[in-house]
Image 1 (spheres, one colour):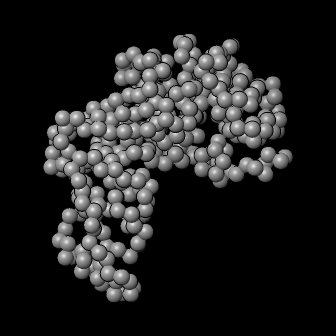
Image 2 (cartoon, rainbow, N blue to C red):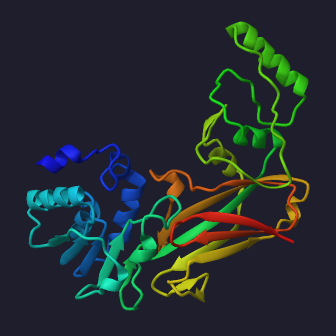
Image 3 (cartoon, rainbow, N blue to C red):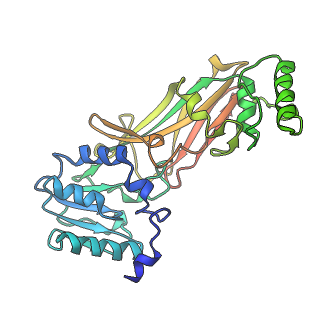
Length: 324
């Protein structure tokens, strides 16, 4: 098993432990596949360890045609099929599925070709362009969440810091008080005296690194946005070929959301995208799983004009523009 020497279960795409141990993700797919694959001919796009196919067999799928483009993962998959005695139920192909390849004797398609921004891993390419197939999960969404934040917190997000010996209350407060506490910390641990924030928040869109280390650790904005609310969203329905109940051409490259910023004049606002997938009453926010938080959060500081959010359906990139 030379291929097994090349498989890294901590870092290898498709088989990494963070993903296959993501119990919320696994429970979501278990619920989605239940009662939808029984007595059906199925397709699995992105086989990996075969977890989704094994779930489909559990729920009564007749047989499965599965695609796995990576050679090492393909060999791993073949071994798994042999070990489980599923040679007559699962046919594994070592190629990348493309929607132009056509579908033959398939009733249900399921996949997890998504990343934290939904579209980068190839979901757009997996969606069938002709009707008549059940695609699981059947809906994908992007929600834009917003919350007012103090300028002091915004400064902490955009200024890189690995210093855990720093007082940063994350609220607008007397700067002499903050300096006094940091002076005491410096004296206690014989450290350099902390300097004031030098970054100036410019009006408009302020970008920052999604996983930048801050005095509060990594990704502190996830806690902050929990106090916010959804201010714009889209739901893409595969079976109905709609976005927010309007017809969509799946070959288009981007979707736009518009956010009225009148309520944020002279304010500082944290804007965080939250992507996910759903089917019927089952809903999964990707930022609660192994994917980590959605990329491309921003700060709006005293914005002038409404915010236009563009989500690229080919690479998942989320971009922003203020329009008067």
